[in-house]
Length: 250
Image (cartoon, rainbow, N blue to C red):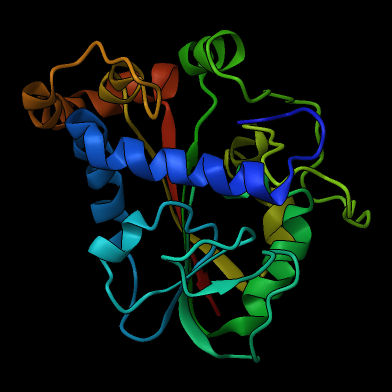
């Protein structure tokens, strides 16, 4: 994703359309990401679900009634909104889901303030994000266009920049927040970290993601993901590429 000058609305819309096209045309991508979406869907509680950063609209396959939004206007989503200023009433949702979105949010603190406002008690925030481990950090730093800035403070309360490119990112943000969540817990005691789990060892980097190439045949994606589950307790802290985080509103 871009980390340069602010993208025009047309360029951003074309980028999302490109992701949607890749999703439809690349079976190995669907196999890898569908595992992630299924894990997220398994964590939501009954009720109304808001998706932030819906992008190419894939989560609707797993939660058809989800209210899917993005900061960019595209035809297949339900609304436009900024995670840092949600245009919804207090206690109006039971779940908020975000797939590869939190690390694009300029001021995560503002998002979590909004999340606890719009969630009902017992509601959940379900996040699927990059995990920074010794191996994944090498990959994300040298073979991925988005930066990894471990010195960042994701809980700063500085105002968001109105000119920021929505595709700017720091892939370290989820790890900084939830690897040792004491600062998060202190600031948001009513958003309990119910679960923080490392995922994805080989299948994700071998798939090539949304790029046109892949080193993994689609038929081997699911067996490899199954194998990763058994290896995760040993290899996860060393080389996991993703993390699933579930927060529960108290």
